[in-house]
Image (cartoon, rainbow, N blue to C red; front, side, top):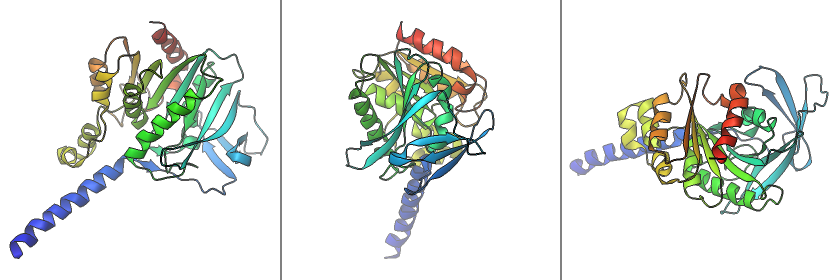
Length: 298
């Protein structure tokens, strides 16, 4: 009996460690359904912004004096359905300026929610893009549980939702993802090639196992389940792809961006930047806007 006892315990510890590592990829911040006001700090300018939550979770932007602000774009709060029948929440953002004919489906990173991450994409809205950003299952006001399986299905559901919006289906659709969202964008693009016109991955890691090994050592690579793989996906995707990565990225190594680009199919574009992780649109909105348009007109 002792023989089996000492064999079972390491196996149990290994299983517990694997569960622990696999749970590290998602750090959702859930918002209580009754929340009425949310404080946001702009990552670039460090300005404080408040968002009042109205009917249907519609956001109203105010300053610290509670004066209503005109942000330069309109926001429609929407809910759409995950295949498991729980609701996902998102914002459809329309610029006050003329639409340039391109809609961006934005996949945010692994933490927070759209209230903490929307400022990352606002500069592209002001460049004339329509943008749809949403919260994964278990994030923000989205229902369900935050798992990697659900996140992938969330991405597919968001693409389907965009296909049914009549106000964008006469234009072009680009998936833009940052960090975990960049990895996810490549996978979602490879499996929906007939539904999108291009994909942008910023600060994306090459695979779950490789980023686990980078952050926690080689043992983590053995413990992480590779449920889907960005490196494999970029090899399978045949549409226009742009990889954006900062040489100063402190979260995902620059070499991973280079690896994704090397394995991508033409037409492909690589844009090295030198700011922080997930800061591309905050500092390079003009050039990213130009490069997206160039990518779609290859």
